Length: 500
Image 1 (cartoon, one colour):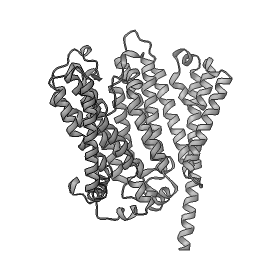
Image 2 (cartoon, rainbow, N blue to C red):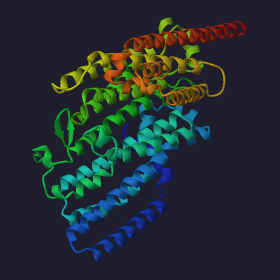
Image 3 (tube, rainbow, N blue to C red):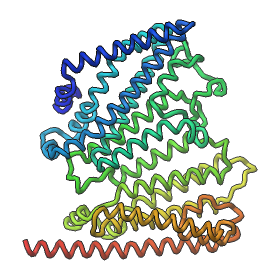
Image 4 (tube, rainbow, N blue to C red):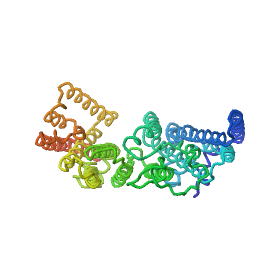
């Protein structure tokens, strides 16, 4: 079934694309384009430059409309159905999960696509007046379109999985990320340019590219600062954006197709192996574009290991199970008991260890011959961070199995209060000023190991190793607590079965 014959797309099209609405929208876009174009041409001295400026404005307007108008439509696509109690009817239709996902992905924001289409003649007029190379115009439109689809897929995923407030917060966060990366992360840590689809406007109007064929050679790299560096090789940022948008959309679609027709009580964004694949995907992006020239080996490992910790802690929260999910799995004996009692760490911790050790090997390979480097300190960092992931994930899984409203949110709140209070105490007693104090602080806040210097490690290595053992003991304690909760769930299930 094609996207344009999808019943869900047709339903949205009939609701949003009425003839009177389409005609008025097209008229407004045409009038605005004429007014803005005349204003630019009237005040410009160079017709070619005014054409490129007009083209840039049109492309930025298309990006804004697709991200804001289309993103809000995708964000409410499932939430509105749930509010109207119609989503359960869609779940039992004959549409496959993929067909329902595609229908909502392209149907909900269909009006934003129509507005962008109405602005396309203005973009063509600006490209002709500015003598922009056709290949760059087509490439910029592809960036806008694929970037919008990825953004809509993410908004639709949030609309499916979380409540309205959390979904809005997630979309706002993604907007901040794609607009803030050019001035922060990419300039400090990565050889990677802007992730915003608005880069398409810059792509067309850049003076150095005007009239140059799309695949013209760009060597040496220093002459083309807009290029990214992937594993030491220069790559065009436009094609990097297309690849990132396509793969990100693929991950979102994978999660949507997996969950859109399931019972909301057993939503699971990824399977464990898919979650590990996503962690590898994120780490490959960071390692591939990492700015090695700006960091020493220990500092480079600190950044890469910090990213890895953040990814696996996030995946740990994603893979957590609620009481209904655990009860169903225990009734069907779907997995070995040791996996159920330590969930989701059998997948997270080995993955964090392997990727962390792979990072150590990469830093070992790329470091300079005279650089300060201690492989044992690097390995201990990986072990402590992995134990931290183990401890906190098991704690959150135990909290999520407890009775009460929003137990996971309560668990996250307790965890935030714990680390905040611990940090205040550490600073008050100046523990970070001494090797032993830093090691003792690392027992309660293992993230301290990321900033551990070689000198502090040498003077307090025994305390760090003892602290690692304490982390493992704490994790074992949470396994026992989780075992007790799961036993209670089994007992209640047995009582309910006898009553039935």
